[in-house]
Image (cartoon, rainbow, N blue to C red; front, side, top):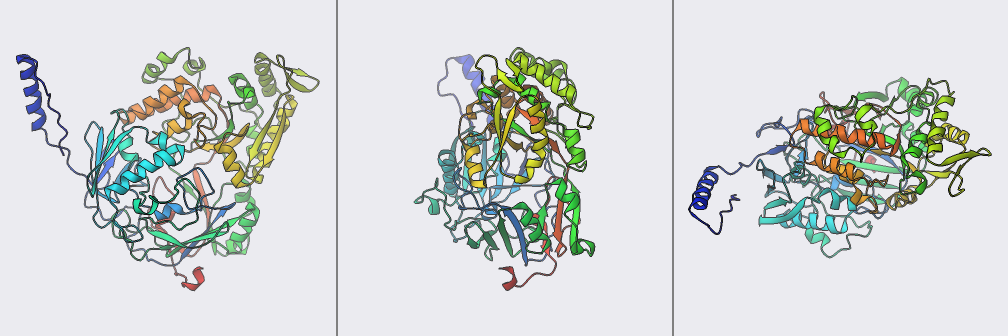
Length: 611
């Protein structure tokens, strides 16, 4: 499709000649050709005639049930809003325009869309929908459904969508099966890809329903599964659609092999683990080093009925941390935030609690080339120098490393360093209490938790903080309360994480941008309002190539590091999984995913046993 705009008025012979030359040049250029996929940077791995991903087995049998677990409860199937507790597995209900491959940093291939047209300047992108694409009620997926989806997500959905898709100027239906997204500028190279990632909603189903209200009405989707049965708050089962329109597409062949997917809910993590060992469900991705080291034992492990594996994870591990709510006055000063970081003795904790399973996290892009592990190079300095005076001076002269100890538990030197910082910020030690010299207020705060098991990790740090005269309370609440308090930033400190991909982009705005600091439901949990950070986020999003992206990410990383918005915790670069040994999986694993959706049942259970 042509997007050549000739001048309406000619102001003279020179202008005429220039315009005619430009017009003939533009008209001589061929419009972008439709493609089967798009890549963020570089070329696509898979050609137009590819039959399946390398990490999928196209001959995998269909059948059986995969039973998993989740924590807490649920009261909604609408995962697109900030209200309610969403049932696990709702992603199985929806297809997106494109499908992201799991063995490339960031490439997508047609799913609902059979082809995509993307010009080099990336100011617009056009998707041609497949005529065969159908929702679960038999209605076709159309361009109007795509437009409706983005309109309702940006106006009534989670605030995340408004930020993530802020660069969309307008969306047009060229015909019932062709839709074009126009973007506000050409400095957001990721936007054409991320508009292809969202699940497309059926306009005819939602147009007369309350979208912004949690609901257990069974939704209509275009994905491979539909809701089969559920018991609110306790379990939900999905069944593979016999009429799934996309089953034989290259991006779907060898995926979604289980006839049923079931999720059972537990209120206690210890009970959930024992239920797994008793065979109540099939698969666990373990996050506790203690449980992994001590609890995965018994006859089922000894005789091979349960398998236990650690698989390499090729993704950046991001940042898990104690997150300060800088909206609180006591955490507004970066010297205070830095001081409290000296109370977390990772080395002792790793040795005595984690069985030496973890690595200390120093970067927001850990386990990747985007981590700032050396002094800034010339390319980074070009981004950072204009911000000098707005960002910590250490950015230019030091490589950030979180405080470290010898692991003995004796951290007097570290605590003294923390106390010096607190004193410089106006806090004084009186009668074993830390007191604000201006207000007379004692230093006290609360750590909000949803997992009781994490209390043992925090307890040693709390003892160290008490030695600094700081009183700390732990508040453990249920999942629903926890979600609501995080959405409204009603906390002093939480344990949280900022997951990263191999191609960071628009989600960084949701993490760090000032515009979202006071918008309930966003992921700017720390409440960051920093124009320098905003500038670097915008630069990262607009990076024209991979090298520029890496440079911008490193510059952003070191500014976040030296601003002390969090106390970094730890990471592990493997998936720790355990599963009952009745499943098959492809010989080739995807580099950037666990690939659970490519497994299959070795001996499919009967329909009766699946319930």
